[in-house]
Picture 1 (spheres, rainbow, N blue to C red):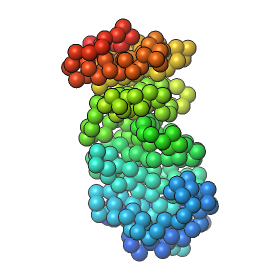
Picture 2 (picture 1 turned 180 degrees about the vertical axis):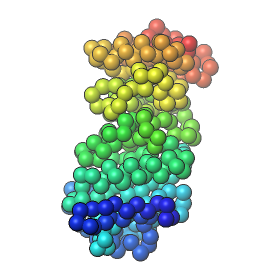
Picture 3 (picture 1 turned 30 degrees about the vertical axis):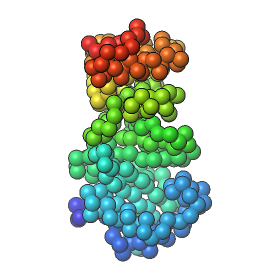
Length: 297
């Protein structure tokens, strides 16, 4: 694993070594987690309790199971941060980070960049993180990478996905259900429960608005990996949002080959009917038709 070791020069001749964790690091990891405040421990582990040794052993096992778990070690032997990713059954990988308070500011972004690069080198297209919405430092870190959200039932949690190759993320490689992309929605979509019951997986993308990082690929060059992998698209932008018309025009111009639902025209009360119609079209069945969905072109 020598190719996964990074030495970072520090002031006054010191060095920080970032390397794959080993079982010999467990005591150092326990000291790292002991150094966290109750708030930090809650944001990282969703509990005030320090994780048990078995949890740390599970992290380290990623290095031997097609994943990666790193520790950042000072030249005095202290572990001041850790982070890594583990593969998920759908072909993506889940990542997490912990940085000691006195090392925050640059080390978290540095570790995430290492993880994204390593995962991309190992044919993983997306890294995902399950984050409490109140964890603003982690959310800001993710926002730097043009994230999207995989909708899930807990409103207090964001399951964010970022691309390992830059730009916007795509869908997981392994398909479970029909796929619905909701554009210009920076959190959970209001109708996601209805969509799940109708047999859809839902990803929301902030789109080209103020919460988005980088240019919207659909508006920039007419291609977006989330659009390309979807079975239907909902444009959730408010009609007064200047991006609403631009998104709808872009879908018309490129001839998006799946139904595109303009929620501003349809109205929230019609979403259930529209989803059933889009589901029927996506599966090639006869179903409800509507005038507010752009059919396959």
